[in-house]
Image (cartoon, rainbow, N blue to C red):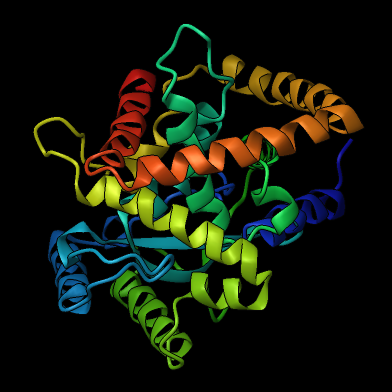
Length: 335
């Protein structure tokens, strides 16, 4: 039987691999925090919404990946940290994030997107997924050994999403979780002003962390491999442009992170419990195959050809719009 210490070590390992844009592995009800929903009255909720509106006004880039976008395309994303021994969910940070970053914080969505592409599907889907995965990898400054190979990148995303979703299922089965602020103060939604105080603390912490005028994603990239960061940044920009350039008539808006996270919410409890071990077994088999030298050599050759093709495709106007349509279709099909 898993202990609090073993679960904590597992959660910390997942967080270390996605330190800037963490996957929402917190238990149900805490995985995608909406500060306004914590308010004790409609008036308090309106006050929280007003604070957020004033805080986002004038922003022209995502505070996680640094991609340019309007204030209307930004949403407030609260990332959390788990303490299994104390049954504590700490609201660790809050950022105004683009639609792509908010959507990819959901392990359910990321796991859905990382499913193997069927040969009968649109052949361009693999290239679109490559851009989306690279966006996630670039923000979190994944090592070059992962980003230089499409196969390694897809496997890394799939494994990380599977582990995060498994952690979410396990945490949701445990009782007694409580929400705490970044400073460790207990947040009780029924207490007057609790939501506003939490929001103000998150905004203040965010303001302090941005004194160097660099987004968390940029700082993470600067501390990692420069060549991997540059390659990832190009893909990150392409994925974000897919959102910014998408037609409102054709593309479903992913402004609410809870809506993106609801991909897995429509499944029954039995389906949720079965998904994690089956996916883990599948990933283990893929990892064994990928470690073979011949396969690695072939993957590197394929990468060189595919990168050249992707660079040509990225120069074509409108190509990146398909990425957002792919995310939107996946979200719609899963709800």
